[in-house]
Length: 150
Image (cartoon, rainbow, N blue to C red; front, side, top):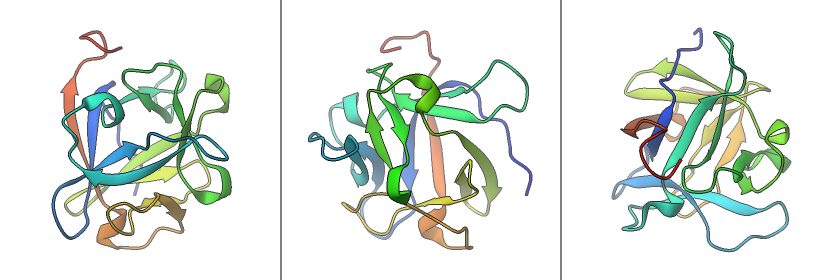
């Protein structure tokens, strides 16, 4: 499927896994390539669970970069086909596109790999895309970029 546009803004990214609602979450402790990014239960503090999604370049059709909404310099990166958040220069952040699937969107890396949430608490990995619910996500728009936190 062709990529779909996403309105730039702050989002909560819901994983489609069995059990209580789970959100993409930056863990508190950095190791190796930064802080591992997992899916976890809704956290009362939005600091680790609200993500800014913005075009990588100011041109139509550009892929997107994603960073912590409350930490503009903490962007998503993909070493070893796993998702991390790290305070590195923006040009080094991973770029993503979004494709519609039944029940949500599939989030794809520049290499065409899909984000996959194996289970709550597991680090998000990138895999060749398949029609599996663990690779389906819901983007919940929270607010525009210019309203607090960004």
